[in-house]
Amino acid sequence: MAIQIDGMMIFNLLVGVAVFFIGLWFKRLDKDFGELQQEIKDIKQDYQSKEMAQQINRSVETQLDRILSKLNQIEQKLDNKVDK
Image (cartoon, rainbow, N blue to C red; front, side, top):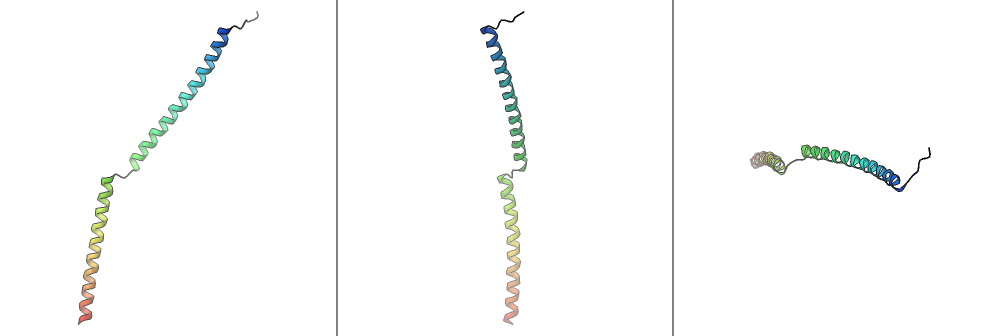
């Protein structure tokens, strides 16, 4: 009942172990790839596009222009009062 180990059995054992570890490696790569895809989706949701940034900048610029206009009006009124 002695099992005789020959070169083919050793080769098959080594191939089996190698396939097992390669499978684990591929599983890990697949998991990492899935995580990267999720991070890309999150970045796309959080990322502000150039067009949106330009729109926000225009809005802020318009508001600042109105504030400056009001300040100029107030300054003009104060100058008129001082001149009287």
